[in-house]
Length: 304
Image 1: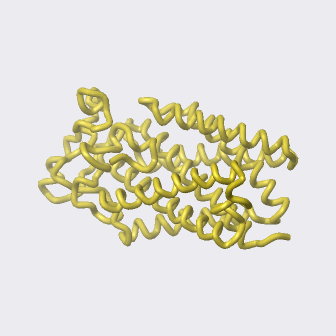
Image 2: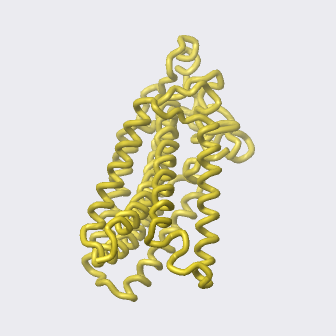
Image 3: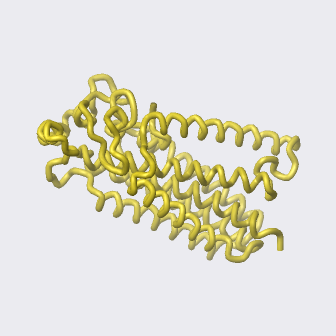
């Protein structure tokens, strides 16, 4: 089963028949340890024929993994300049989220609330989706594509944030705080080991997420054809609030998978370029949570 986040479902972030580390005895909040060894040194079910696409990488084999496993310790990647580190992930994530923020601020400042700006927001969202899909199906991370996605996503967020703020003053600021709270709480719970990211956990969560997306797609069609008035399940009433809360919980679920994939990638010595994919995945998840949080804040604020 692949990752909920498409950028993590390729190459080293997936093991032979599951998520990175899920074939082993998972260590709650820590790198997976198991008898199958380094996922970057084995075949990948989603990689091209011939096995691990990192096989030509001189660092694809972890010379320390066997010794570590014999001693019962988590596998530690040997020090190398082209291995992904947490600093790399943090730096790339700061760049992508910073680009989103700059795009949002410029869109808010330069595009007044109007039907035209709403059209530009939809156009920016579609362009961002195209960039995201292209990056998802590329074999290698493309910083230009990822930052372009972030820029257009920022324009979309800036316009809709300004629209929400014009009706519910302060809603975007509250949504940002809410997003930070969800992300921080999820990370704290994950690191504390209260959530064990296992294959069963991922399968159940993905089944719920897929069902949610399908229901929302059907709801969108019903709204478009006038069958479901006032947004249907995505209304600004109690039902909309329930759906929004479910969506935010799913966003937190995606974050736990992202954290696990990143942690395993670092532990098993993924190439440094994978940090861009990690940042890309985190950015998409945080955007998801922010948009849902924005709607939820508006619902609880009521009509002015």
